[in-house]
Image (cartoon, rainbow, N blue to C red; front, side, top):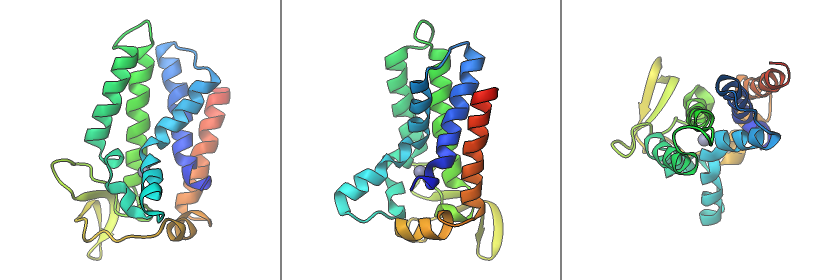
Length: 188
Ligand SMILES: [Zn+2]
């Protein structure tokens, strides 16, 4: 499980450091931890699915946390309530951080073969799933869309074993993202 969150964790660390620099806000260690949580946050639906049905599979992504328009509106709305839209609560740090951590997660979930049919980018207006750079009907397409019926279910354990718990572009890319983000946060 830890390897599967390395890319999100790397994204969180990177964006905390980047927006710390651009805004002049000095993030404490706990802000880096929060950045990691933010970049992982949409996958909290895995816990909801487990609580409901015990089994975790790719259908967890049909919940609201994987519907970018709705979830980003809610999360950004909550952030504005907490920090406002300007100083003194460093809104110029928090607003881009929340936006980019979530977008990073959604793009990561939409890229490549291993990511199980992408996500519902256009919900609540459409239930179709969208994925980038996927093969459909024998042809690789820049953007592929699937109906919920076309999108199959893969139990989480099977997906992790196939794509993450052995060297694949997915698992190596995740670990590399994490290591580069740590180097950037330490030296950059
Ligand atoms: Zn996700």
